Image 1 (tube, rainbow, N blue to C red):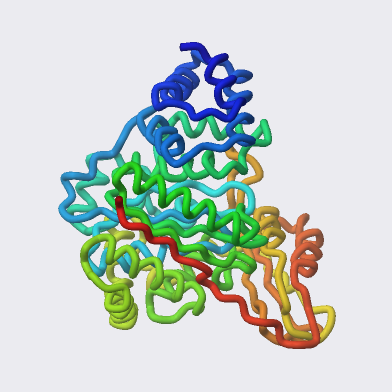
Image 2: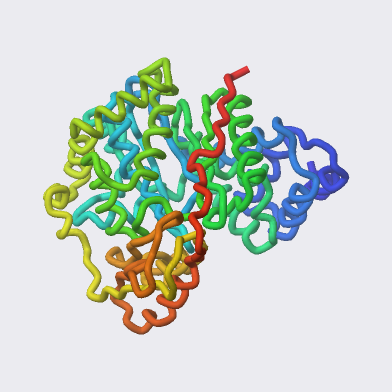
Length: 438
């Protein structure tokens, strides 16, 4: 087999065989096929696409390029959740203990943040002492004992994906549905999940800007699930404004804890209940979505989800006293209010700009090796649909970088659009895609 022939075949719009896909993925991962040839193939895939079977074969070739986690020692159906990334998305911090409290084992590997999106692992590390680096045996033992573990992904999981993504990033081939779908689902499958709930973000703060793009990606990932015998549900959700009212690691942990105590912002709670109910159904704990949702609502109200979060923090070495005393979380030395320039209703937000502003304050990374400031971030006092008077605070910036305050304050002020009339309310849940295995 020759790489030239594989490139030519896809360039001409033909369907690649499983053997051809495995040949290029494994050869590139091993360093036997050069960047320039794989770049040519990625561009051919970008323009010619891949069918369902090709996309599933690409996914499994990536899965088989490295280690796979065996969760079979954990009783029950293991359900994972993945978000395609957004601003203020602290869903896992609430969802994982909530679902675990309902009896579905949660063995979740998460990543760190880059650019305008935050990472679950960075948020967890805001809790003093919290250890995200757990070896596989300890990871499984913790889930068996407490029902939940949240740990950092290892470099040995799907190494082909990391290498391919690096090449896609510099060859303008990132936004290809088959390539995105295989990248996302490969890591979840390699992590050992029996079933997966996908939160596909859509809007000006998401990678998929339009609903049509987001639905296409969601369908592609659910189709992969059918092909490789994994049960999947994809929920397309709005990201034209940050989720909740905080952006930044410790700030988001604090908001997540408020939600676990029965409070918190309504959009965050709604998303967690929606995703969680699907996880309970996929995890064979409930047969009906509505019953599953009511069960989760009861766990939030009763404090059961909060206690499961306490178990998680204790099991991974974190300081459980932060649950009662959130002031023990990192706190920034500087706070700066961004005033509204005029009276009006918030008619929209540039969510990507809010995410970038949080990064400049220190809450995110411009490059993979950058250090982050867990205390940095933004508290949103106003969101779309709410009224603000001139001089009233739109948002409060939290940072230890005084030199960036003026620039970031201007960026945040410009991210709010104001109008004289109440804007139409956007739904949070746009579409749910749930296909039975054929």
